[in-house]
Image 1 (cartoon, rainbow, N blue to C red):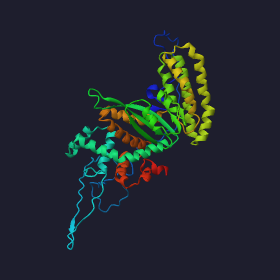
Image 2 (cartoon, helix red, strand yellow):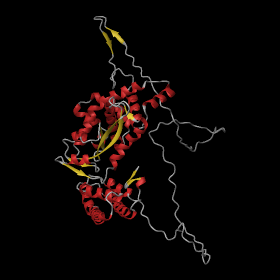
Image 3 (spheres, rainbow, N blue to C red):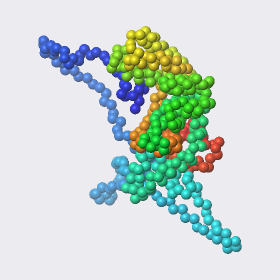
Image 4 (cartoon, rainbow, N blue to C red):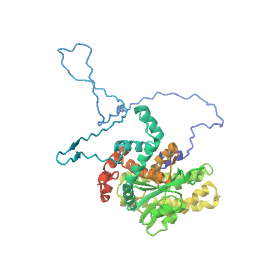
Length: 454
């Protein structure tokens, strides 16, 4: 999990000398006299223990009344003791049997029968609830199909084929594709996007002995809390350049040269990521601790100020003003310090690379201060990518390029659900049940968090 200054593994604690702590190989002098002892007493306020966390009120309750073993005839009830514990009820599969009586008109011999309720997938035995459960477990709980099938077989005696679950998932992705396009359009209209990319293995018929290295490009709208995964076969600029061809606004990114090429388009302003710049100095701690720790102290000061600004104001204009007054001078101090010290380090050393990266990214880092909506780093988008990385460890690859784009659809919606605190299984079940009833112009109402914003 990222801390506000980076990964836990990148945590920086300034080294301070402790004269009271003995050194390992330093000579130890015997004390000349025994220390004097004194008795100290004090009083303090004892904090009341908050107790056990209350159980959620929405849980179903099974009450059990236990009467005393003694005869209580003629006694008055003066109260009761209530003890609440938790039980687990295993999930269940239920066969939904729809019975439609058929009638025949005597006069015309016409057959009359009730209309079959519409399902997300025609001629499919899986209802929306089961489809949502299977897909959610794959992309949120990182459970591949073969392990889900093992659970169905063990608990319910139902043994579906993996190809069947794969077909269901593909058809659901096709059903959700118009909503995915609405999500894409809404993010592109936001005016501020964070972007990053992550590799994914894909089976390709043209590569018999190995998997193809594809990439999921991730676009995040921090203001509306929406995320978009978009699959491309490579890491080149064609995919993102095509998607962002009509985009106008701020694009926050790292130092990958593809983003610089995209930023050359009229109407796009590139903002940098402070965490990527900080990470370079963290990596230089072992080889040049004095310079690296000096830089890390400044980064820590920046994030301390940023946290204070965010805690005290939600107004974007005021946030921009505070950042330019308090953070921009520190960035300029780091730049000046690098310019003074850069000639004293080897360009290819870790600290030299960190300094070079910071100077090259400095215009973009300053651009992060031109709008109060902009975050100082891309940490949030990296958090959105993390579920895909966990899934990658469980099912290793996608079966085709088309399957990789279908995965992007579900990762987009589930990532947006997470940002809005929406239950992804409930959202997907309701969306699969209702999407056919919506006109294309009203599909935005189905996006995660739409009700919260409206």
